[in-house]
Image (tube, rainbow, N blue to C red; front, side):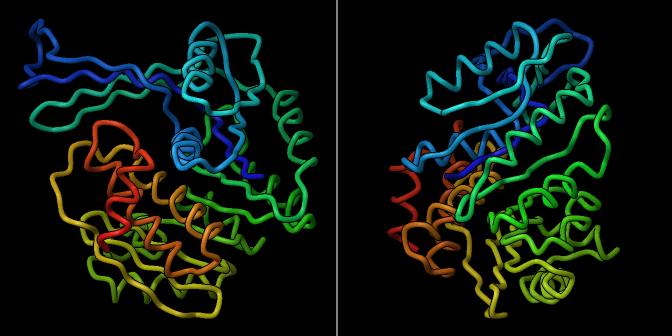
Length: 300
């Protein structure tokens, strides 16, 4: 089974305007409400690709119930822990001449609720996948990814980490199956700027030396680089098209990679499926559907 963890799920309230004029009352052209959060995005695309998975995380208040209800209607299986106080986040995203977003902080997660999540994770078994993605709320200790990795590593669970700087780096001693920084995040780790696939390969290999089995570096319109467990290097250029909404494209790449790996047991095909899923989401208002992914996959 594949499990994703989202510590801070959200409702994404997406408004489309011709132009954002600060200080004025405006009417939106369109509006959309979707469940959000990096792990949730991975679960959604996996579900769209007909890959069974369970979304773990926390929910609070009426917003949390709405998030879970929306996911269940989308046929995403959930196993959220209910918090007793506060509300899950509502994030406002404005699509105008530029993309603007205001993200809420979310509810406080108590130590007892964290322990409840860790107990769930103790039930994972060999062959399961666990996707740890995104930032963590300020109420949680910054070593939570390490704690999770320490619990599931002896069970031979395939750990996938898609997170920024310290959260990712601290997980490397547990030899995650896959890490997926983007080129900006990879550069931030080493204090450099990364613009080319050659640079991505160079610094991706450094993360392999630090413990990762496979390193997938997403590079937006350029495409993606993969250095696999045997140090083989792969690069696939991103299919062309007008980017409509890049939110969730990196998460879609993770989902596509997992789906491709499970279906083909081949790293090149996994990368190909990952690039297809990431691009399909970027070219759409919504997260990638199975049809959109395979339309691109079959033409790479």
